Length: 155
Image (cartoon, rainbow, N blue to C red):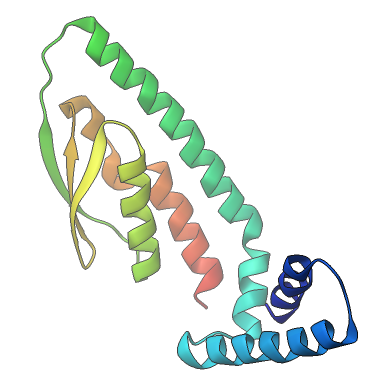
């Protein structure tokens, strides 16, 4: 993180002089120290995050694929002329961390036809445009991928 902050400092300044470099090192060290104190940040957590980068990218790829599939499903539903059967579903996600549960809520909300209405602890309330969109949401690919990420990041 220190190196990234310093690199951004140099890029935003547009040139390298001894004064800019020294000031950048001081500012980057201060930001790094503040993040360590306030956000419980550590180099070991950064290494774990970098090690899980392929799985994070896989989650992003899964999200894009699910958004595309859901867009087609919503288009099919709208143009079929069939009446919608909106539904609220409630389920408990087997995710341990708050970050993973919030990521799941975001993935659900970003997918067309579904929106997370409420998240309390591990209990989700989701509104679906049609009852068919609720099938398997509690054990979706998002849940499985986030569980895998949790195992890697929380040790």
